Length: 94
Image 1 (cartoon, rainbow, N blue to C red):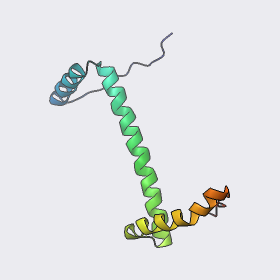
Image 2: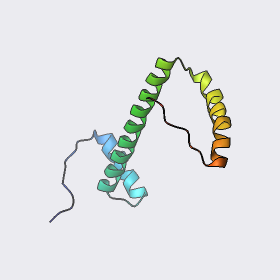
Image 3: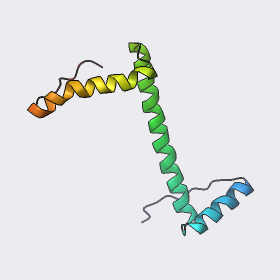
């Protein structure tokens, strides 16, 4: 029994040639190259979704990009004593 499913994709001739050359340079199969491309695409998409969520929440709270470094520093100063004593901050609403 196979642990994989065969799929067919189409690429423009120049892209196919570039992919084949890259696979050859890296001593990988085209399947390995395409799997890696999919993993990277998926990871980027997950990051983009998380980033969009964070930006929306920041906008709701009136936080600008310029506020981020300051807020991180304030949070770290606030958390430092808690870390030393082992007390954790209670999570507040989302």
